[in-house]
Image 1 (cartoon, rainbow, N blue to C red):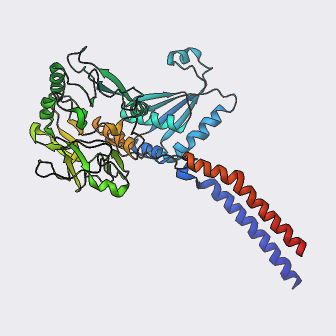
Image 2: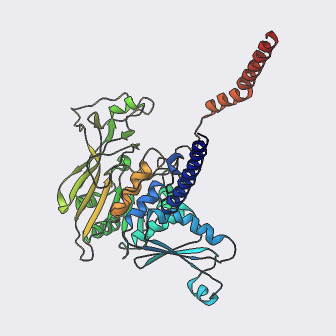
Image 3: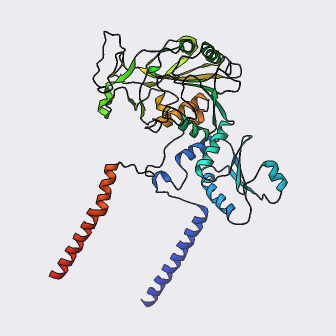
Length: 450
């Protein structure tokens, strides 16, 4: 019995060492990482992983970092997350002190600067962060920066403006992924410059000169891509030739939707959209979007375009022809006698056709009966920003970037109004101390009784 007990002890010890050795061996061969933070904030975001999945070839990253210190270890450790998601992403280090002349030739001025190479294109980075690396990879997917020309001079929304009606916030974000917004004034140019990838006509407020309209029509007829944001209050701006060239008709009145009351929207002119018609731009898109004032659109079939509905109102909507009292906007009724159009109605269309230009395969255009949804004032509402990015990427032909996820960490920002802040302050400064005193008094009272 005594020897049996010793034998059991030795066997247990032997099995313990064998198990530990097996775990150690398996640990060198296999790795498993679990990230339990919101949206996996300490690992690659879904957007970064989606971008990596669009890179269908090897990527080389060259880090010009000195071997002294721990800079190389930091770079390698940071990029390891990318290399785990994309095994053919290679990292190579170069000592910038070995060949200073070559570094000056390459323009390397910062220790640790990165150059990313993919299919003959390169991007340079001096900042090591997930946002900068992922944006650089997006630019590599595009191949070259895209030139987006915004028509200016007629009260349009400004691509770099910071006012509420302007589009500076959206274009600033798109610039990080390779879009470059430039102004286009037909007072200085008689035509759209060569090399323009996309023209944006964003809600002009005054009538365009006849020459500007002719230049836009010629641009479309020659195969140029166009985004036209058209607000219902624009009125007659002399853009009928452009609408005819696109095979689109803007319906009169303001599109209102009675179903918004169920969502807590007091103004029926504010349209909330959560479901979208089948469209390559909104494929897999599940975010709700809002549109402050909308003009309905109709298709005429002219120009050989294939028109696909992009945005559509509900069956409870109609085009309101009468003036709406801003103090009581809900006091409106559908008037069939006035010729108002009953919903559902399209207010966003994507258009495509075989390009008339021999240099391009396909021509694309998007017409939306509202420009506010991409403005600085409404860009942060629901999925407006994500929808805007999808529209731009589709128009530029960057289909691989259309369905990239755009979702941040949900618990990074605490949104709280003044009343809630006062309630929290009262709880911490008064209720919680009184509660602790009451608990302490109860404990002391019970100890004295015992």
